[in-house]
Image (cartoon, rainbow, N blue to C red):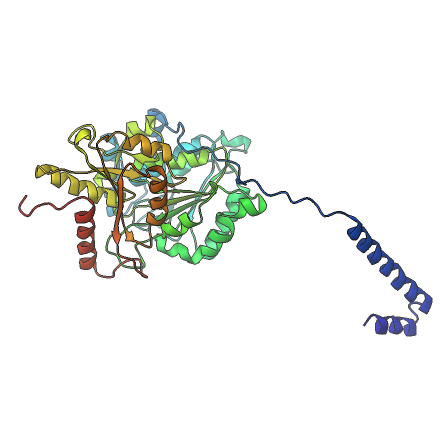
Length: 469
């Protein structure tokens, strides 16, 4: 090809034969020089990478409380609407009930989230939240944007604490921007965009919410290739938050599992945090800690569904003022109805199933029977060695440790958690796990079967309450 091209150029008069031969000789000499240099240079000495390649990230347990006056000011704005703005009657009733709840000193899940966002905005942190039904919330719980029932006009309550151009704008008074959007129904596209946004917006809290956690599988490429590996591969850090509704509540195989086992199998070297908070205060402090952490890492949050409105998932305002993120939560009945010294079995679990276990344990106590303590592991990765040991040490006479999960045995946290528990307590406890049987599908499509399965799990993990007790 080179020879024919050279002949064509010579025939056309562009170059002479001598020029063509000189160009070939010069290029051949350049290649030979590079080859000789390569052969004469000793190969570099192999320097194995150190065992840990990512810089260690501090844990999320830090001071994240907000003073009561600030919380009160944010809550007041959240529960109102502009003059002349007509709310849908159902929504007006919901906001009024939430205002009454806050006035009584309590906070539900959606309000805890909004208070976290509002406080971050006042501190100069941009907050960006997107997802398929995010402005309203899949479960009609968030309502971050209100719509006039008659005119269609929109009102965003948190805009009162947001600046138009962010904390970097001199006119912003140091406040951050609040950006909330409903994204298109392509998890792959939406999560890819939000990941890129989080890489560039280094000081912002950027969150993407799946409509149900199950649907995040449509964005698995982004998770595998970017979210969990980009920092090690390219030194590219992200603080992206994934909000993935998760929990077995009889809604079938496509609306039950955010596949926590997948994230835990990808977790290593502190590359991500995987958490499943079970109270409004825990969620509040987790979001604020993620925004304040000094080393940015992605956060995967397994968020609840029925717990969004459950009384036992509420928190007090005081817990938002003085609390912090807890990686492990002890049995809430201690001290009180549960006698530490009498506990022989401790049930460890994560998520909504903990409240099912607590209810069964209460029934055993009411029947005058031995009942286990129920300990919630709120942070699954990095695994909370110290906090878990501290809590379990409070039950000095316990000999049995049970990991309870509502996912099938080959899913959920057991495959990961079982190894951690064996490492921490090789001889201290009789260790066993209770879960649904191995399955290819995450959950049954029958609500009746779901309830029977749950009863069986509680019978095996907590204990059987005698009929008529």
